[in-house]
Length: 125
Image 1 (cartoon, rainbow, N blue to C red):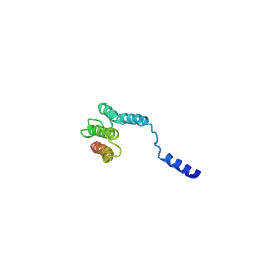
Image 2 (image 1 turned 135 degrees about the vertical axis):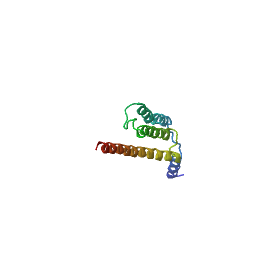
Image 3 (image 1 turned 135 degrees about the horizontal axis):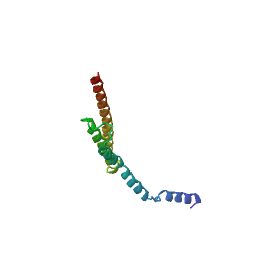
Image 4 (image 1 turned 90 degrees about the horizontal axis):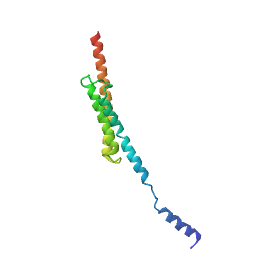
């Protein structure tokens, strides 16, 4: 056997060697990410309980509605990042529902604020 053939066989053997992977690091990152993904939900709970709001709770629908929407969006965020596998179609569906609920709540809050300003302007004239 020539020297070139011997080198060729050694190169083939190196290609099929298994790679050693340290699996401890992804588990640490995964547990930290699962904890951090629930932080918005905890903050939304605190926001709901606190008397300080973007839209005061005395306004019939808008006051509690924006609190509920913050809770829903933050809960969907926590579910999306901890419970669901990132490669499933359910993960993508929850992601779209979360963003749709967030955008819908922002639009609803802005419309209600504009209606309240309109009512005050009309009633002051």
